[in-house]
Amino acid sequence: MWEEIELENWKNVPFTSGRSATERDVEEGRAVFFIPSGSTPYETDLPLFAIQIDNGKNTRVPCVVIQVENCSEGTAVGVRYLDGGNGVGMASEFEFYNGIPEEFSL
Image (cartoon, rainbow, N blue to C red):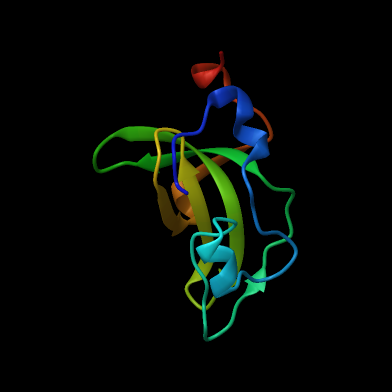
């Protein structure tokens, strides 16, 4: 379910938007997390291309945002990585794009 994403097909990944994700969304690959205690959707068009930034490791990892929700800790972001797998981070850890930035373009 969390297989590699071909760069030219990044806009075709399943996502959850306009509502909080459910456990079923996670099981079916449309979301990375669900918050049983409650959250509210962050209004944005999905999917988004993003760069996850780790300043400690000095890395910039391309990913596709499939979920954004506001929770008690802030704005949580669920992503799928181009080379497979998924992750969760806070919005401050990402740069968001409507398309592929030049550094990762085909």
